Structures are given as structure tokens and as C-alpha cells.
Length: 156
Image 1 (cartoon, rainbow, N blue to C red):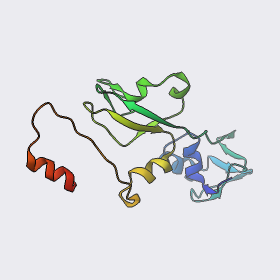
Image 2 (cartoon, one colour; image 1 turned 90 degrees about the vertical axis):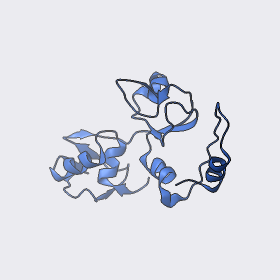
Image 3 (cartoon, rainbow, N blue to C red; image 1 turned 45 degrees about the vertical axis):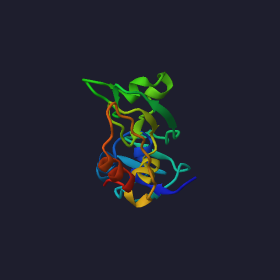
Image 4 (tube, rainbow, N blue to C red; image 1 turned 90 degrees about the horizontal axis):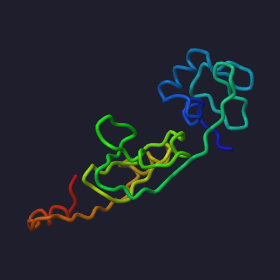
């Protein structure tokens, strides 16, 4: 049982965003083992009896999926204009509060991770993690030599 901040635990239960979780705690709507807690940095674990507005809450199971994103859909959780990567998922995953890790534009295809684990997402996309990402480009026109050199040296 990992010990974590109360606001992070509430977020991991899928009840609120991080900011909303802090507000719930500050408003006195969260109790731990029968005691109302006002400090969102309070440390707790899944063995504690954590309640929001008197109702017991439990952390969601962490989910991480690999998706071969096709062209024509966007790396987003919702859109009124385009199909999203979440639209490609089946029913058991629709309720899991999933989101894409990183982005591939609509015309790109390739591996995309889909998760509900914010820590995993941050550890992958954060520049501090220094995780190297490789992209392969295929064009329908000749690729200029100068562009090839720029890509091989890296583009920030």
C-alpha cells in the first residue's frame, strides 16, 4: 500500500481533478478514518477509510493500453469535430477515465499509450525523464537533404 498525498488519492479514485480534489479537502468534505482533513498534503494509503461527503472512495485500478493509432483520429479525450483515440476503445475502457500519453497528430499513425495513471504519464512525457522518443517519417515527395540533416541532429 503506497503512501500518497490525500489530493492525489482522491484524483486516483476518479472523483475529481487535482485542483478539484484540493478544493474538496479545503472545504472539509473529506475524512480519513473518521477525522475531517483540511490539508490536501495529508499522507494516506488505500488501507485508510477515506470518505468524500460521507461516501467511501477507493482508488481505481491502473490501466495502461498500447494503441496503434491510425490516421484520421486525434490524440484527445473528446472532440465534437473529430474521432478521438478513446472512440476506438471498447466498453470496459470507456468508464476508466483514460487519456493519451503524448500526442500524434491526425495525419500520423503509430504507437500511443492510453492510461489513467497520471504518474506514468508524467514520467514519460516530462523532459526531466530524458526518455528518447523516435519518429519515422514517410513522405509522398522527395525529402530535402537539409531537412534530413536537421531531423537526424534533432529538432527542439
